[in-house]
Image 1: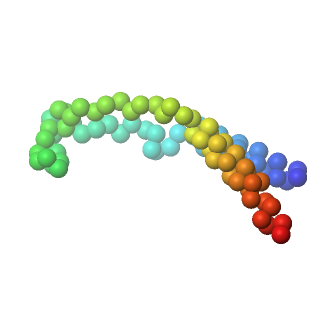
Image 2 (image 1 turned 90 degrees about the horizontal axis):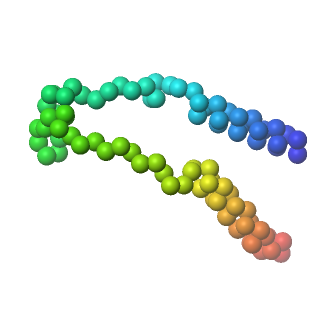
Image 3 (image 1 turned 90 degrees about the vertical axis):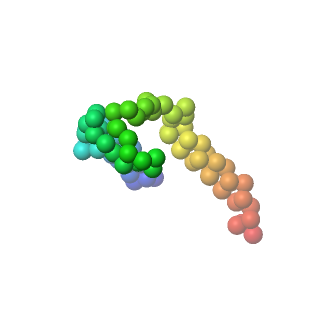
Length: 86
């Protein structure tokens, strides 16, 4: 039991640490120059005229979704445990 708790705490710690580490993907590379022409599905357009919307924040935190999935899985295992006992 101690090993399970220890491994779980280690994995949670690694997950939290990996969220705080900044890598090359987190660096802003910027967009194309404002007056450059770019080929799109609609033809040639100036990249500076694009209307880029700010991304919206999710309404539910991913941890809440993961906790719900875990709870549902455990409840399903408990609900159908009587079948495996036979």
